[in-house]
Length: 269
Image (tube, rainbow, N blue to C red; front, side, top):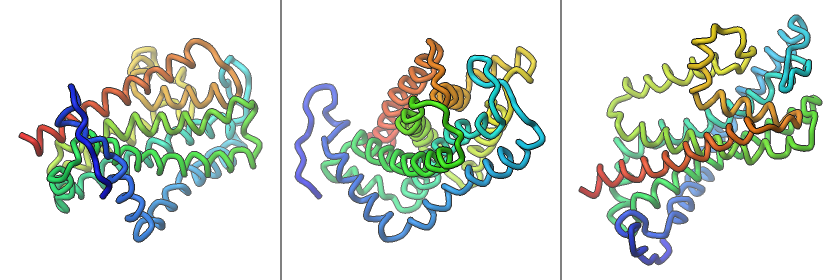
C-alpha cells in the first residue's frame, strides 16, 4: 500500500489522502474474479431496448420527445435505458458489494486500521461503482449510435452524464447500505428501485400520470437522469437541462459526505 500523509484541518481523521489504495484493490479483484458479473449487467438495457424499443415500438409508432418534437419510440426510451443502466451498475457495486464487505468480510474495519480514513474508503468504493457505470455507458452508447438513435453531437455528453448519475446513486446507495444488517433488509432496495424504473417516465411520457403522481415522479432522481439524457440525445438544451444536472451534483456531494460520516460513526467511535 502506498505511503500516505494525514490531511490536516477539518478533514483530519476523515480523509487520509489515499483513496487510490482502495481503487487499486478494487481493480485487482475485478481482474481476478468479477469480469463475468460486470459484463452481464451490460446486456439488460440492451435486451429492454430490443424488446420494447424495436419490438413494441413497431406498434407504438412515434411519441412526443423533448421540445415537443415527434420521435420514434426506440429513440425515446434509449436515453432512459442508458440512465437506468448507469443507476443499476452503480447501485450493484455500492449496495450488495458493500454489504458483503461491511457485514461479512469485515473489509472496511481492516482498512480503517491502516492510514486510510472513512473518506478514502467512500471515495474508493464510489469510484469503482463509477467505473462500472462508465463501462455500461460506453457499451450502450455504441449500441445507440449503431441503431441510429442519436440525433445530436451533444449526445457525446451522455457518457459523462452517465458517470454523474452513477456517482449520485452510488454515494447514496453506500450510505443506505451501511444501515442494513441482513439479506432480507437488502431486498428493500429492490422495492425502491423497481418502481422508480417503471414510473420515472422511462418507458412512457410522464404526462400519462395524474398531476399529483407527476409531482412525485419528478422528485425521484432517476427521472432527472432520464430527462437529462433525453435532452442531450437530441440536442434540446434549456434551463431545465442544467437543473437536472445540478440535482445530481447536489445528490453526489450529500451522498459522499453521508457515506463518510456513516463509516466514521460505525468504525471510529
